[in-house]
Image (cartoon, rainbow, N blue to C red; front, side, top):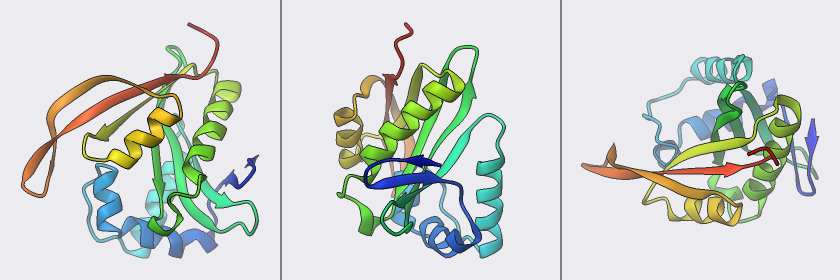
Length: 173
């Protein structure tokens, strides 16, 4: 649906259920996404995919390799507000696919897509202050820190700070 150099953003299909089952049951990934991890059966995974892809106020894509259409993650813009021109970013990349440029390219492709198709002018996100690799990715992709929620997310017996970041993606002010 949206092609890049190394990746394509596409809708999910039945063949992706096993991949997303693994992703949704990856405790480390779910915590890095500030999710409350719980066991996810195939039925729960499909319900999650149906809910995400069917949301009227968002877009949800599988990040797949262009070469062989292998899923490596997902990217979404949720809670899009067309009046004010912004939406919230969510992205998850499988551990074995990290460090290969897939996330950075997916960010650029989805930013262009929601700017052109939905008229969004800004993307906002939250990330724990301990997620150094994600913060590095966001900064390298042009996101700026605009605030901090102090001791906002509970993990492993402690409350972590959550950094707020945003990026203007269109020429509009």
